[in-house]
Image 1 (cartoon, helix red, strand yellow):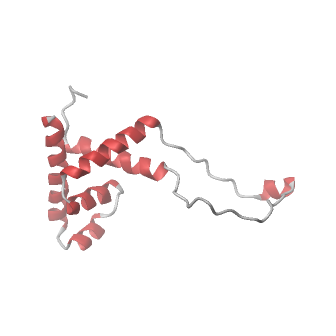
Image 2: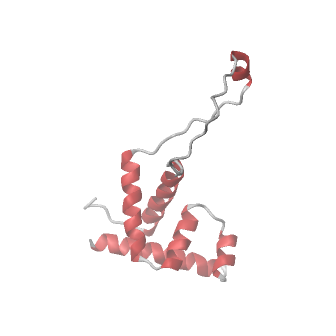
Image 3: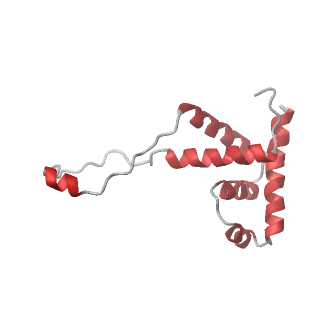
Amino acid sequence: MVDHIWTADDVADHFEEAFRTLRKLPSVKARGYISAWPDIMRSAREIAAMEPVPMRVWPSAAAITRLEQTYDWVLWIDEAERRLVWSRAGRVPWKQICWELGCDRTTAWRKHKLALTKIAARLNAD
């Protein structure tokens, strides 16, 4: 990625991919808790009548590596900007973001673009 010139849109796309990767990771559960109940034995008719379980798609190793890179990038901006960037990566509506920040949509959009531009400038400097 030496020849790549980063823009704010590239950084935003990278954050959106990182957010999708986070959603694909398995949830963290406490270890050590087990159930003493026996497994339920279902008949073929019961299994056929059940709702199909949605297929779980796990993230690739490359996607996890890019997610870890994104974690390094958020250290270059302050906490309010981090929340704003991650909210937009998660497709939170501007109306809700503006309510949380206490500003209008244009100001929130400007702050978002400024945070992405800071990251892009730092990436291009390296």
